[in-house]
Length: 67
Image (cartoon, rainbow, N blue to C red):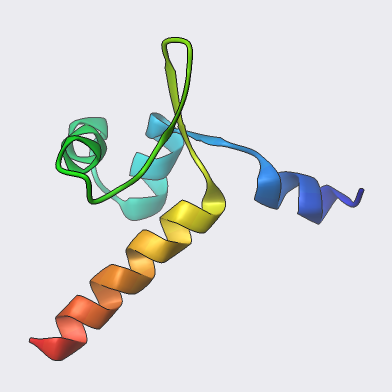
């Protein structure tokens, strides 16, 4: 498996998602609670897939262009 494939399939932490989106961790938490951003729970850890993050970004881009 290539490094790029490993990086793309790696689960992201709430801190990493916040950094990518340019928001605070509390905002990511709120989006998750509102069902806007789906997560993967592993025991007490909350993680996000790169695909879910891309889906969320795409949905926000579409919503803005429709306004």
